[in-house]
Image 1 (cartoon, each protein chain N blue to C red):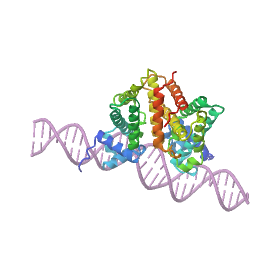
Image 2 (spheres, rainbow over the protein chains, first blue to last red):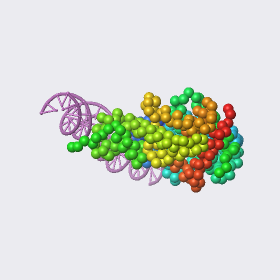
Image 3 (cartoon, protein in one colour):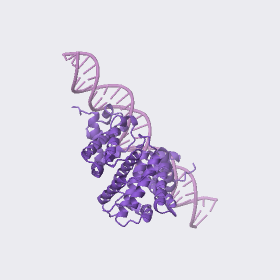
Image 4 (spheres, each protein chain N blue to C red):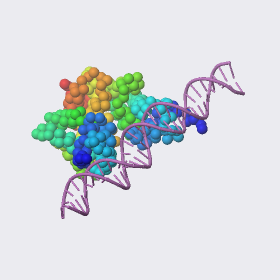
Length: 189
Length: 189
DNA sequence: GCAAATACTTAAAGGCTGTAAGTTCACGAG
DNA sequence: CTCGTGAACTTACAGCCTTTAAGTATTTGC
């Protein structure tokens, strides 16, 4: 009986793919074991429990998205950077719905600190360089940007916009226009 | 053996309370049966299955939130209305995290159409009355507002803003200022 | 007061998580 | 080359959850 060659990393990648295929909620130790033609118990040597597995998927997704966003941001500034980042974000979420869903779980702060937490915050701030906002406005703006991106993608994925005929991409670009406008003219406290 | 007096409505309300207490994910037929001192199988006379139970909680939450939002909106216009609606939304989500989480599941469109779907869309449009936006800008703005509200609340609840000392309420109010500003001066296509 | 509808229980199958103990394979040391 | 040790995987099992089917008890309405 040849061994399957399980690894925490291989399991994580496979779990991420599984999440994109069948939904993050349906990623289970049993389903993953089935994919490797192995008994469920075998996974517990590589992964603590199902929470651990899901957290690993979340961190993988955070890292992947950070890479994409960094690439999109390279050499751009101002609205260009804003749009590129936003589209990278939305594109990743649409392409990898399971991974994106994974990112929304609550991670232990130690896990996030030691890995993909920093890059995100730093990068979102990079978008704002062109708009020259002082603190704490910058933090407020970062939070608003992240909220809008996440909210839009999340509602879109959940089908929340499907009840109106207006083109969903068009609304997205208008939202980016609006964000650019408000960043260029950030209201005083 | 006195009967428990189960009803779809009573079960739904109890499930909603349970969701707020232990998290929507943890709302299970068994847990709910335990709360009524009844065997799990008893619930299946009143509710189709666990999906049905969860959908009912979602619809309950949608209706409750619609009521609150309507009350908040009464007699207000412009930025006043925007802020009142937004605070009602966020307040409900923070007060009822389980119910709020329930609202995010995908509902069969027939369910939503026949109940709490309409009021929401109509109400959000009521906010915009003071800003006099033509279509399709109005739809775009509705989508952006909803995205920002949902995104902010969702990230806040998930602890996404906890890594920075900036006051979370302050950022929220600045986001509302920004939304008001952008609505008053909606960028042309 | 009785028949029929309703409310709930018992029973049971099937799936998932997770632990413990057993077996088998791979690999380095002698 | 073979032996032993540790890692990889399986078997076995306990516990919990969902859901259906069949049985019992209680309420309701005629």
